[in-house]
Structure formats: structure tokens, C-alpha cells
Image 1: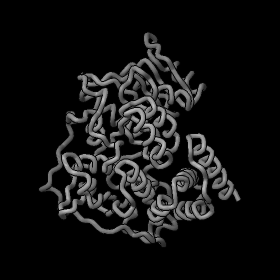
Image 2: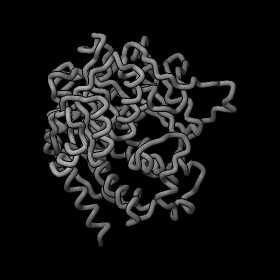
Image 3: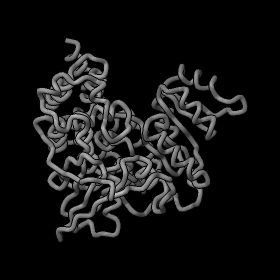
Amino acid sequence: MISYISSLDIPQTHSRVRSLVILGSTGSIGTSALEVIRKNPDRFGIMGLSGARNVKLLAAQANEFRPPVLGILDSYLAKQLKSLLDEDYNPKILSGVQGYIQMAEMEEAGMVLSAMVGAAGLAPTLAAAWSGKVILLANKESLVLGGHLIRKACKETGSVILPVDSEHNAVFQALQGHNFLEVESIIITASGGPFREKDTVFMQNVTPDQALAHPNWSMGAKISIDSATMMNKGLEIIEAHHLFGLSTEKIKVLVHPQSIVHSLVNFSDGSLLAHMGIPDMQIPIAHCLGYPERLTVNLAPLNLASVENLSFYDPDMQAFPCLELALTALDRGPSHPVVLNAANEICVEKFLAGRIGFMDISALNAKALDEHQFFEMNCLEDILKLDSITRNKVQNWIRT
């Protein structure tokens, strides 16, 4: 049976104008969401926008959309933000984790777009779930770290999650109108990133600039590196497990270099239903923002006649061990994905800073998983404690 997280009964969104908070408005997902909203200005009222350190962009967005509440990483940046706002515009400015949580809980907003990067998005997403919001989820780490807590909150409050990730949104669309009991498996496609045809010898000397050069998608630095290691796809498997209630045996990954087929659903009669489209995040974002209606995005439609071929093949687990690590973490229990994600975030940060090599990312992730033992995961504080312990441990490894 499909998880209640992907329920088709979407509360609080049937009015013409939908009230929305965007957590992570200065990132790639947030800026794409605002572009969709610009194309549909009569459909949305923005109650809050938040960013981390990009004060200038957040100020520009705020001056344009004028939400009553803004969020920023700390009080120092809040002062900078205030100085950049129009003189006749005086929103409430919140800062830090508690500020993001307050924005996620705003009574004035029925929808929350969770688009913060990394583990930082967990606490606000969980707060939105406990507040009964419709959550447009782009922060996959929320489910990777605290899927069991978010599912519990959704069940008790009626909160609903709509998946923004292109792969999970594709599955969501392909499932609609079908009996979930007849699903044999889902197939998540992967572009393969910039190194899909390279071997481990080549990748020993990969530079950050090479890893950031994704051939199909325009993404932030963290997600781009995760795509290059295929950790992004591993995290998406864990996310799909929580979204759709499927075991790892029913979640497959195929490399699809063209990024035209975003995912497929395999039914028990042998039918495969695919979602196809150009690789632009405005499409899944618009689907979630307007659901169950379709919004105008004014993008060039997919021209199948111009597509020379659609190819698919199995991922190379030896060249991209992070994918196998994610499967291992999910099978071992709820605390292992927390360890894997924390280790990976530190490794990506250090790789971008030139402190470790590209293949060190997977090696350190594997070391963190191998050394991890059982850890109780009953609440948010447990998750944050394990996350902090793991980050400190991996940073010490790198220093020494």
C-alpha cells in the first residue's frame, strides 16, 4: 500500500491563491520555484522566504515578493539583510535554526517548500509535518535522516508530502490512477554525472571543477558533487523507501545519460509507465505547487524527434561505491543513513576545499559506516546527536 506521505488527498490547497513559505529560496530549487511563481503570479501568496548566506539574493527576492517574514542563518547576516531592504518594507527577520522552524510552523502558510541543503533541512521539515502542512519536499536528507519521524508526524497530523525531486515526482505522477498493490518495482534513473564512462583510475585525480561540471542539470555545489559520486542516487533510494513504502529490492537504478526519462514504474503485468520531459526542475516544482492542477511554465516542450536515442544501463558499483553504501546503510537500520549522510556532507565540503581527493569521499563514507554500531533513534535530538558525533569523527580523520 502506498505510504500516507504520498496521499492524493491534499488539504489546505483547494483555494485559488495558495499561501507558501520557501525554505531555501536562494538555492537552485528555490530560485526555480520563484520563477514558476512569476509565471503564475495570481496563484500564490508568499508568506516567507529564507536563505543561508546569500544575503544579496535574498534581499532582492524579498524586495520583489515582499513576504511578511524572512529567515537567514545568523543575527549578523540578519543586520546585513535589513540594510538591503527597501525603506518602505519592514518584514520580521528571523535567524538560525529556530527561525527556520518558526517559518515552517507559520499559521498563515498552508504550504512549505523545503529546499534547504543537507541535514539542516530536517528540523524545519519535521516542524512543518507536525504543523499539518502540505510539504513540497526537495530536501531529501529530511527523509534520509528522519523518515520514520516524519512519517509518524504525517500520520498524526494529516500533513502531506509532495516530492519535488524529479525522480520521485516522476514516480508519483506515474502511480496516479493505479493500484499500488500492482507495482512490481520502481526504476529511478540517473544521468551518471560527469564521470559515467570513467574508471577508478581516472577518478583518482578528479578536481572539484571537473566534478561540478554536470552535463545535464544546473544544480548547487553539494548536489553536483553527490551526482558525480552517485551518492545523490543512493540518497534518493532511501528517500523513495520512505515516500513509497518499498523495500530496497523493489527500488532499481538505471543510468540514463539523456535525462529525458525521469523515472519509471514497473507493474505486475509487465507494463512500464515512464515520465518524460526536458531536464528542468521547474517542471516537477510546478507539478507540486499546482497539484492536482497543472501550472503554466512556458518551457520549450520535449521534442522527441530531436532525441537521437534513449539509452539505459546498470550503474557501475565498483566505480561508484557510494551507491552501494546507501543500499547497505538502508538495510542496516535507521541510524546508518544518518551516519552516511553526515560523513558524506563533511567529505564533500573537504573535497571542494581541496583537502581530500574525489575517491576519498567514498572511502571515508565506507569507514564511517563500518565503524558504526546501533544507535537509538527515538527523536530529533537523537538524530542530531549522532549527526554531530559522526561529523566530528570524520573531520578528525581528515585532520590526521
